[in-house]
Length: 469
Image 1 (spheres, rainbow, N blue to C red):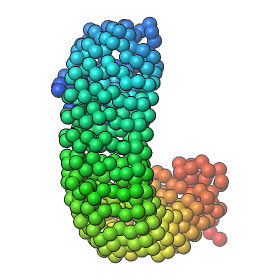
Image 2: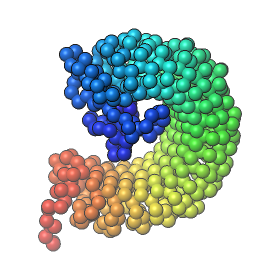
Image 3: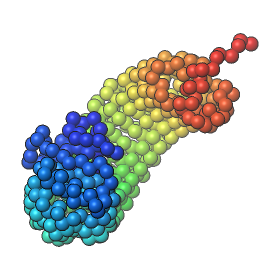
Image 4: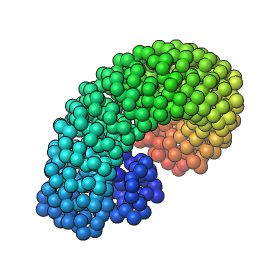
């Protein structure tokens, strides 16, 4: 029920809506029937005068979940302890610094959300909640986690993101039920050696910390499905990573990697691989061994060529290689029949790669920041395109035939030396966003261009065609 993480507003489990949807999401595996769950929803800002009324109403209604997100609370009254029927309690987005001792009475509580408050110390009252399955305490001011956190022996999910943690206590490795651990955006520089004891861990995020070495202990977590080490100054990946045979998502972006160990290409279950924003100069032929890949992110490296073996990734749907030094693409790329998103912006292309024209299923194509001096007419063959980016290419003109791209929703031609736009452009049925600024357009007033996509399209629709000369 954490307010700040809800993404799907149309979920069938949405109980009510406010500034964001509050759900009992499918990922919360609690030991109660969600269909029978009743929720008391506080819609008005809380004051000291109405707090007790709210808690009493919750008690009378026998609600299993209570949401008090974003209500300006600075403290909880001791009467909170009377709500011993609660299974889920969300207090995120308040100004709490401590919890009342009476909270310990909530022995049925399985989910507790304390994110985005002002806790400087870990509330020890939590350690008495023996049935707790999920604890979210991100966005506070915590410097440490208590050594005896392992009292929460049934804890399955723990999020302590966006705090000030400098180390992980050894006691954390005794949370033998833990399946998901997220410690991103802290100040961690190392991982304890006994981390390998978390044998049930499936999802681990350590992104945006201060890890300069790949944590060797992680390679013993052989049930891991998702691992994020992005935004750390890691210079080398351990060859032992090949032991993580169930890994389906691996995040290594924003590190200092110059090369990858050959063993990384033994991860046969890998579906999403993030290698962006490193210092990679090439991609070895072994990339072709990762045949389960559906998403590959290589943007912002120093790669000059792609090996033909990349064409063995027959399930690839997203390929992002912008911000490199590519001048061409392998012709066999045309064989990737599942590819629907291709980003090759900010490379060194002068000629349109022929393989792209054969990717008829493409829905997103990013070509901005290259050296095309004309509109690549081969693009007109890509009838499924929804998003086309050509910014920062001196193409000069946009052909009227672009209206053949009837599925196009977004067109970005910023800074492309355009003097005019095709007359029928605004009649494209699905075009919603048109970016034309930084062009010497003579047919559009500057104030219309500056007003953005909606104004440009509206202007194009109402202006009559100029008389023939």
